[in-house]
Length: 211
Figure 1 (cartoon, helix red, strand yellow):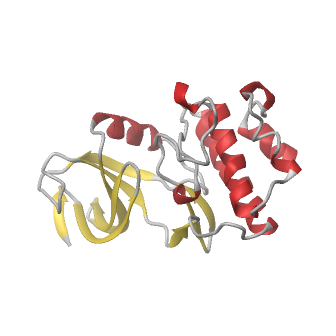
Figure 2 (cartoon, rainbow, N blue to C red):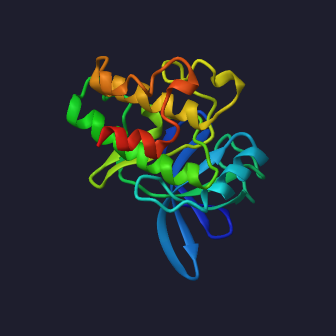
């Protein structure tokens, strides 16, 4: 482990995503170290602004953002002053290799993601890049992570170029469900509607329709 900011240590590489690289880490708060994940992020102030918004989210289907700041020492290819985000450590894997896993898995994941979005959207936080790589599966269920991306090909709403919205997040949930099913399903048709106005008005409404 190497200290990259006060109270923040980095260790092994865990993965690289659209907005940065994630490492195993240790975060010391009030003298008690905690195992965490630490993302060294591209995007500077945008990343830090997003992380501060995420610190207000507490939900069992969202990976919590615990702290953020700028590094005081270089690490790997990241220079001193790089934006970092301390994240709750979730022992699991993302859903990238889960195409066609079947109905039970698909709808369990969709319901979990919608529940997390209901919480986030109610607090004014959009995800922007719901895709298999940004949903984790663990023994405790499914977790949304890596908020704030630009959108992933195959999972992005037709109108996403105008910016993220509740409607674009919901479309991406439908695309995630279709990916996990490996097929079209009428229960996802509303989420995947081409026109935003034809989709559910909220994650809560979408979740209720799947009940």
